[in-house]
Length: 319
Image 1 (cartoon, rainbow, N blue to C red):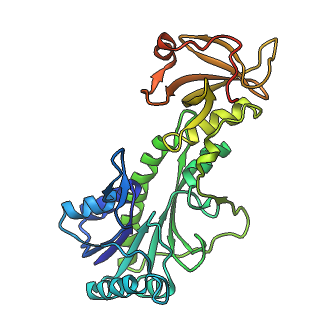
Image 2: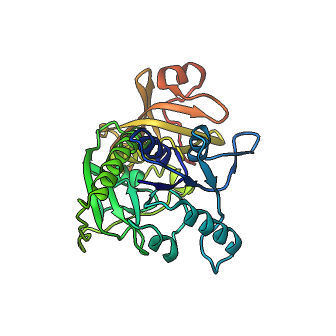
Image 3: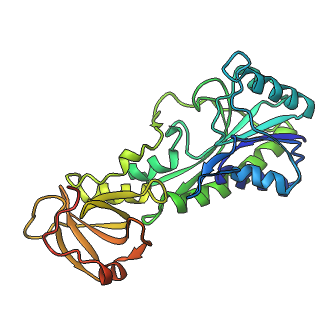
């Protein structure tokens, strides 16, 4: 079976690696154009492009796929390249471009999407972040037959993954990426022998995982400690929860929710600080900060951070 692959970040690269290990022929990869990254803002190839080049796979990077859109020339070139592959299916994982109707209808077996949630919960761009932020006990991966809606296509395979109490988006991402690679290989093997059974998504339970905005990373100390602890985990590694301290941004990479003390000062006030953490009053309970990073500094456990920085009792964070 020939499979064209469309994806961009590391989550997608894991799936592409799984397809190659399973022996599928991948004649072409679609990925986003190179973007500026790093301190020097030099153009950097996506994780998928780097992997494809290591395996000698042809890469196309259209800026758009609409034949009547702003990047019609790119789309026409991509159409020619796709049709020349004679591929049976397209696998899509975190690609970043909307697939128009001509792409969805092109391969014999259609376009299969690897989505990092148990649909219809958390359709959209940031399902891993939002599942942790919401306090979900579990999530998973759904292999979906793509249609023109936003993650609305029929479900082909799905598998559940427990969200651990200490999971960050980073740790959960890695498990779901591996699960997605395994499931898409299974789905294609079933498709080859006509064994896939599409199931429409239920109308109940639909939620949307809206794209993460950097502004969300600002800690609102009036929120409950439990809510803030989940947000810290959800925004690790991107964009990183932060609060204002001494006129600069202080990143919080790990934190735990604790019950409120006998006396509750104003939200954002440091209640105590020692080697085990910096305890800050919230709107309900105390948030114990256990890993912090000053602007331009390194990520440090609380004990190490406090050796070089004085976060005294009564200090007000966030304003």
